[in-house]
Amino acid sequence: MEITETHLNESIDNSKLFFDGYCLWRLDRRDKKGSGVAFYVKRIIGCEIISKYKREDSEALSLEVKARSQRLLVGCVYRPPGYEGFSGHFNSTLECIW
Image (cartoon, rainbow, N blue to C red; front, side, top):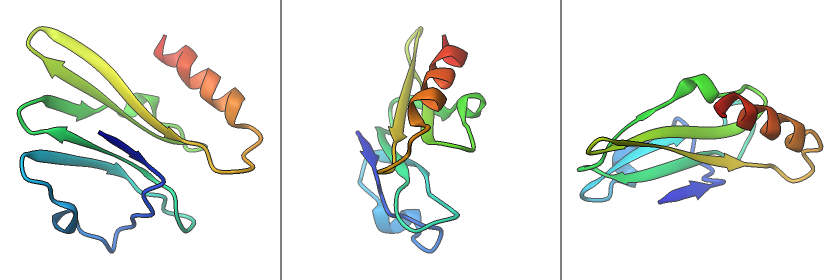
């Protein structure tokens, strides 16, 4: 499950967001209030954060999910209201992934 605009920050510990059987992966907004993205992934599913697609100008979290011999890239992106340059930044991220 992915969540956008989490409004989480470093003062909120992962233990307060615990769901039995799930791991939490999150990217909090650090320079402003609000926003952020997060994933809950079942513990039995192997995954890790892929940081090479992270950009400083966007709020996006990418995970590589591993199931048996398959790998899947999953992403969650938040676009704040009024963010005019989002399309260009998002397209360049997609090109990097491709």
